[in-house]
Amino acid sequence: MVPSGTLVTGIGQVGGLSSTLVTGIAELTTNDAELGVLAGAAIVLDGQRVAWVGPAGAAPAADERFDAAGRAALPGWVDSHTHLVFAGDRAAEFAARMAGQPYAAGGIATTVAATRAASDAELGATVRRLVAEAAGQGTTCLETKTGYGLTVADELRCALVASAQAVDEVTFLGAHLVPPGMDADSYVALVCGPMLDAVAGHVRWVDVFCERGAFDADQSRAVLSAGRERGLGLRVHGNQLGHGPGVRLAVELGTASVDHCCYLRPSDVDALASAPDTVATLLPACDLSTRGPLPDARALLDAGATVALASNCNPGSSYTTSMAFCVATAVLQLRMSVTEAVCAATLGGAKALRRDDVGVLRPGARADLHVLDAPAAAHLAYRPGVPLTHAVWRRGIRVR
Image (tube, rainbow, N blue to C red; front, side, top):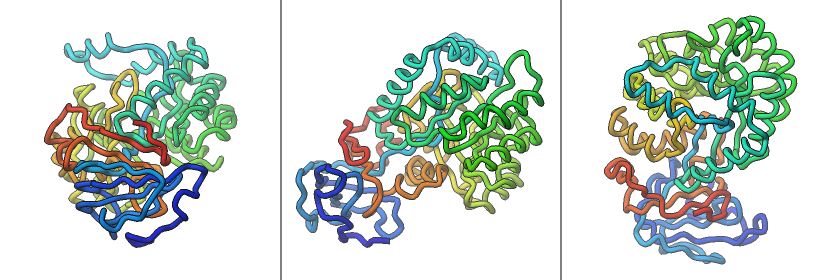
């Protein structure tokens, strides 16, 4: 750990980028145990890394200077769960759901058909549009998944499209749904064999929708085990539509995260609390959009589980890139404190991706900074729905 006030590089010498002193920060959330929350703070971004953090009056010189003028700043959002490689629109399905039709996993098939019919250029343009939309709202590190192809060729195509865009992490989700015309066991064999062989070199993670209407515990275990054999990290969609084996399987296999967690028994909460390396990723925008139950964030946090917040941006059940909306919802409806929600949407997401270079502001971390048009992070929930992003740096480059 490099202490506050220590330079880790020669200012202005990293990666050919100039250094920037951001000063006049009323409240700087660092998510670093040593630095904490600083008042009257400044930070130096040197190339792609944070070079210095400390009191504004002690800040070193830099090539450029940005005066936050009494605004709050925090790490860029880390959105650890999205589905951006898709085509088509499901607004009619959303409207029907708002009129009382229940959400079911089978709606994914609508997007699969549209995605298969789209060109690579069309898919890439959608990813770029949504990444830019997210960055403009402070998201500086983002994961996205395949899962709307469901053939070897289309899953490979989606993986290649995702990896060619400005996303940080790509996940293979061939086990999203059993496509029409196939039985579950035959499809799992395809996923575990030819499909994983095709995509493994283009992704970092493997995921599975362990849920009724999708894949059971044995099928999910087979997919995850096959991914692990190919050197991929593990993730799970679980416990979204009912009590099920997702959380237990995630803890058993030591996955990086289990996402949704809407239906948790006390034993599930205890299991997650005893497995700090398996993050419970909550997706409250999805729960509102599907009119499903909200997860019991308070039980998870009070038990000591590690919690992340993510957008779950996708065209069917959570068509938003706004992490600020997720934070406000977590505070107002999941009974999380502002500090807990901001940490979950930054450091929690980093832990769900098993990264230590994002979601935190300390010397040596990635230069991802989000300046709010407000004096404190509490305004994210205090003024819900108000666009509060004032400036954003990603990898040391100002993107807003």
